Image (tube, rainbow, N blue to C red):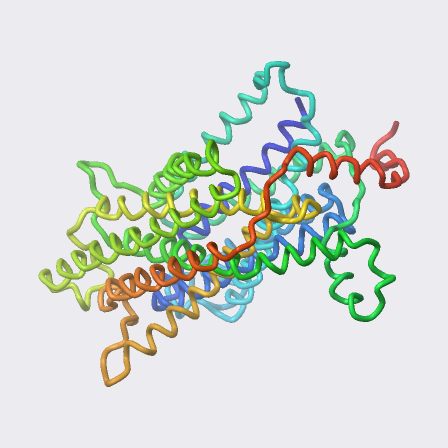
Length: 504
């Protein structure tokens, strides 16, 4: 029970950090006074790296560190990073740095900028480390703590209930806190507490030693195939590497999902912050739409089950990926139409040069595109995961999730380049760039239409690639038996010594 609680509290860090980063673009545009494209570029590059780093961290876990060490390091990085983020706000160090304490760009000095960018790097380490090691470590420590019929024991239900409460508080309460130093400081304090609770149980955890990474095998095949065939242990290693190479063209089409999802999460929330959030006497916090997004992601991904769950395991996941691309096109078209309406309201009310004023248009106009965006994320994630499971080499099974996240990360970073190219093309012939310093003067509707057309082109390319792809017949039971046999054949490591921090 104690171990369960100590590990579960780490989820607090992920949830509260998520909401802190959810409003980060608003912080950069309102306090730093960056134009929204610059702010979006910072957030998207950071987000893309956080996803891509998971592949490298998974390799470190399997080769050197183990899950406990990765969780410890990433939790410490989380704590320091969120602490630095709070310290980077103007009021915290104003006396020691000699800067003003107002939330204005002139109060952001060199020290604050160093702390801010260092915080982003450390938070990315925390997010990636938790994503790689939390599930595996949690399952290891809680193995056998469920009832025979699979139901959770009371303290597990209590732990999940607390996580839900933290989610609700993070999504509803934090947006009402005006000072940014406090808004970032609360997640920082909670993360420190969670890390200390996790460390306090170090002596009671079961520790696994690294078992080696299949990426080492792939690297060895690439390096030694033409130099020394003797360095390759078996033809199976070569065959698995070939399968991985064949998957590259179809995997590259997955990047479009990262582009659409990243643009949605950054631009949609920025639009929400400038729209009417009043419902009667209540004010709707923009992060509440993240809950709609998550709900849509979990529920609408079941659409893929009609094709990949009960249907053909060979062609189900590729069909689900195509369906996700169709949803991405619908999302972009919906966003374009809503943005056109929003721009008309801006012009009719003379708000083009008043970026800080609320637009008299309900925030719930954005709900359909958030729901569609959640569908894109859910269906694509589920379909890609199943595609990797059926088509990837058996030895790479543990890396499927991280390869998927890495592809999304590439898409998130590609969205920055895509927006830059579209902006440059749009200003040719002396025309106005679609991306201006303020959201009100920008023409995101045209950008969304361009993204819809690009997604349609990617859909056609994907269909052509998918039709030509040499699918393997999935045999999950046989492959699972092979993996178990392979694991059993490995020589055991030395027994894990007891923790030196306590007696016995």
